Length: 300
Ligand SMILES: NC(=O)c1ccc[n+]([C@@H]2O[C@H](COP(=O)([O-])OP(=O)(O)OC[C@H]3O[C@@H](n4cnc5c(N)ncnc54)[C@H](OP(=O)(O)O)[C@@H]3O)[C@@H](O)[C@H]2O)c1
Image (cartoon, rainbow, N blue to C red; front, side, top):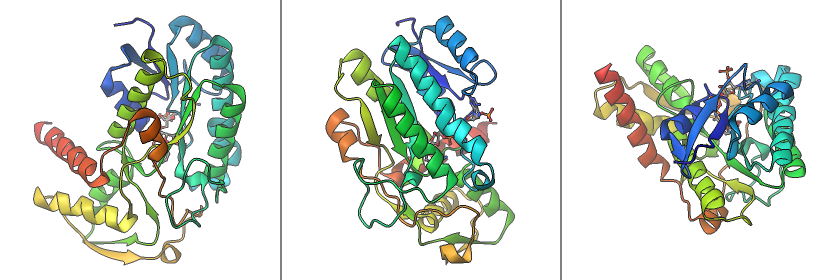
């Protein structure tokens, strides 16, 4: 084991926790750090942290992810999603440290009907997407050795996300109305963490130094939020968990402060061609995630 760690910023987030579970990447230990020692908006703290840990690579898993709240908190969203990552990228670049950053399908406006490629024009519909797009642009400008992974519909068996919300609501209510006219790809944090580790293996160990750039990295396949919920409760029913009646509704029937893209399926071909990485079918990952969650609750 090499001593220089892979430093993950944003320790308590769902992706950071999945990276922490891996323990190592490319032969390096994974070290997750949160606030205050790793406040992405505190340049002095970040400088001190980089000096103390001398990481082999930095992964930014910190973000402002409250899509609706961002509409009325634009400065906070930009501080966390654009200025902070830009600052961290500059610090990494000055020290020759590769920088991995995670972005979102919400940089697109959803007007496409075939999966978005990395080269397609972005046009975010809301403040969250715009702040993430600004973060991407700043990183590209300031840190040549970057990997930006755009992912979508991230979930895990713990924390706050669509899966855990559905299971909680399913236990509380007899019926749920779920939006059925937004299409995307659910992505398990575990799969994204494994993809990041494999990409780091390529660039740090195998010397794939021409691979820097932007990649789409989501679960394989696609569905709607209603389809995602239906699969959650199909799996839940098999283990005797509560299953509410699901009603498919339109986005117009479920107004939210932030507009969401109607279609945000991402084409993952570049990830497969460059790194040989393909995330599993979203239904397979969901089944494994829920089985692990169930096993945990049964042993708790
Ligand atoms: N969630 C999704 O559906 C989704 C979809 C597409 C893309 N993404 C992207 O995927 C990445 C990971 O998302 P996630 O769902 O894992 O996020 P998350 O669970 O919301 O975690 C974000 C983390 O950022 C931390 N943070 C907040 N302010 C910070 C600061 N000033 N300095 C350092 N850390 C700070 C938070 O810490 P505290 O707990 O202390 O507040 C939290 O641990 C993000 O870049 C996100 O934009 C997410």
